[in-house]
Image 1 (cartoon, rainbow, N blue to C red):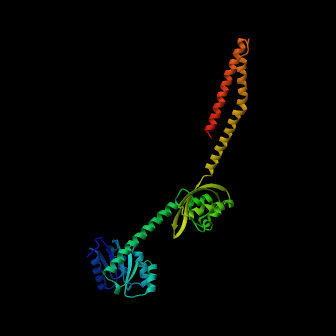
Image 2: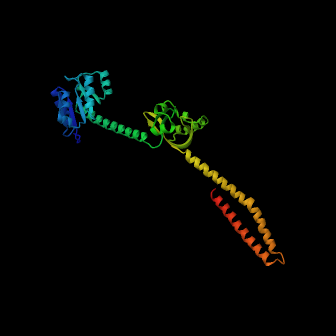
Image 3: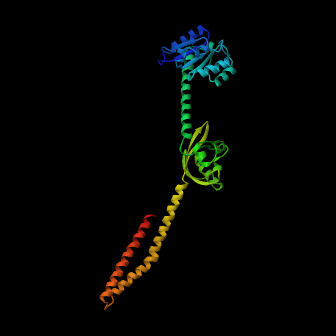
Length: 333
């Protein structure tokens, strides 16, 4: 017969000694050497040093205790349980109360007449695993919240269908000038110029078609109406059961201004190159042609010949300079 070899710590809270013995017997059938503790009064748990120093995997609770009513008892035991699965074991089949007890933090609600070794073992093991998974999910959510809220870049979450903004981080609030409460009353369309809305709708059709990640530069509006350009990198994720976009926004306004300045400078350089190649080189070529003709004249004095040579050298040097300027401007294109 299979017996679970993991070490389990189980606390039984109930006034019946026979119930405790039966539970201990059931647990030993399915578990190899479980540590089972028993209290007849929940108030003892708050002062019993051995109980307080033990990290329990599960607490089996009988609702009939002398010190508290059922609902108050559940609340106190759940608060005391830390991360242990709290399982009610009772004589009373009350469906309405059993459902309510789950909403109060109870892991399972079992009737004594129905319990056997297998059922009790499955309830404990399954609910320990459920607690572990829920704890992992909560931890993951806390990490996400920390990373989202402490991101050095503005971040927003919005609903894919309604475009309603569902969350914002502090950097987004600083950049746009809206408080978180104000963001939650807006859609992302409120952050775009009116003439960009149609383009935005087209872009999100691709997301709805299954594109999970996108990156695009958009014009954005601050609360003051000031325009800025932002590089938006978004990913489609599930957020509290909704399909949403979580997006990181990077302000590229100054970068675009710099690019525009460089492009303007390049344009000016091309204009200079055109001027050099057409307005300067044309008369320069004529001068070079004239010096060549003058060399062929007869009976030119040595002094004039020397002047022609100097003129020719200067013309060639100027020609080389203009060619270098043209080559440099071509490299900038």
